[in-house]
Amino acid sequence: MLAPVRSTSAPVGIFDSGVGGLSVLREIRVLLPREQLIYFADCGNAPYGSRPDAEVQSLSMAACEWLIGQGVKALLLACNTATAQIVAGLRAKYPKLPIVGVEPGIKPGALASQTKKVGVLATASTLSSTKFQTLLAGVREHHHCEFLCQAGLGLVELIEQGKADSPEVDALLHRYLEPMLESGVDTLVLGCTHYPFMDAALHRVLAQRMRLIDTGPAVAKQLARKLEEHHLGANADAAEGAPVRIVSIGTVAPLRGMVQELLRLEAVYSEISLA
Image 1 (tube, one colour):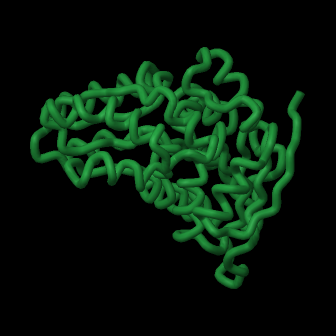
Image 2: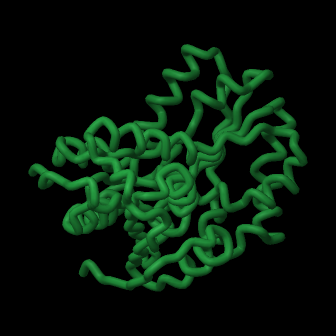
């Protein structure tokens, strides 16, 4: 199926299972302030990281199909788990639609590490995916780097509850990261778009003992390149800072809190059902 031809004034669609993709949206708004943005969150079914692959695929595809139905000119999967599961299928189904996915920044991590020991904190689903394992094998071979991968069980749930800066998060980070530090890891790849919201907790726990790799800025740049490549960038005379349209399956409350307290963006909210 081919997506219809899009205009430069059409919005960019951004999908994540919950609030995590807002960390990428923040970078897009900085880099591309004239673009209209629709952010779709499946808060009613988040988090995806512990769900079976088939369920993640079904939920993610339904959300992306909804965004495509809204006439978006480009689609960004701001979710590592969803990217690993469906990005190849989406690109095959919509070959003319610019589609950008996210993946853990293990290559930048390998290049940044002085000890050649890199930690990766991500969801269990991302770490076990074929896409991630293939990426890891290639980087390990070419950069002769050791990777210590850790599933961040419980972190996404706490972030979705508005507890990104909390003692509970600190306790989990200590449990997951201290063994890495003891093994000589000097660089940590944040392999989930939720994790940049733990910035304060990460700095408390690590005390600058690891370099942090966040792929948000790189993803925003990739989106900008795709829009330029397809001649779909917003016109130079388009207004900057238009309100973001935020849509959620289930409550928008977690999204509203993040947008107002951390991103400080104007937004219009709506709750929908795809059932």
